[in-house]
Image 1 (cartoon, rainbow, N blue to C red):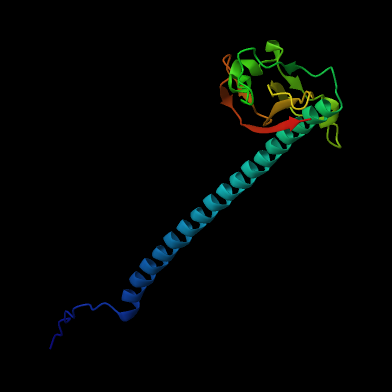
Image 2: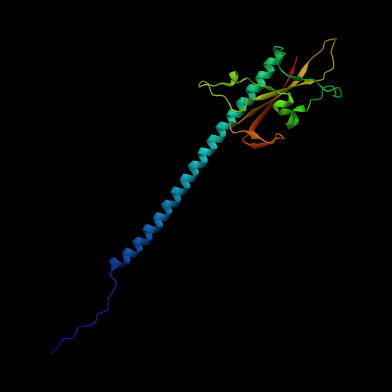
Length: 186
């Protein structure tokens, strides 16, 4: 009697099916972890950029305030070295001057602005900003009261970021600036 081998159909074992499911789950978890890591990296970079922008903005604001105080102190101490723009003859009494609104007036060659000396801006390490903060002093025409001549000035100041550059017409091409104003009356 001869025995013939019986063909027994192969059945997948339970262990073989689990390997396929485990591989699929591991791949899904890997994709999820990778996505989370990318999102975290992007968030940290965005947070760092935001912090840098806030630091630069605070520095620019402080430089503008410094320029404003420089011109205000110069006015109160009657510093004749500061450039003061007289009110135009056509100015209306009490009306605020507007020379500060023209960007070309802020050019150094226009001879209408006062730059804060670098010695006043220098930090503890001796560093100074690339562009000095500036201020403009414009006289406001007032009506004399009781034979007393009152004087008033509009002081406008600007501070600049370290990477500040501008075009020939005064428009900002890179960086940022901050503007502050006050009125001094005495």
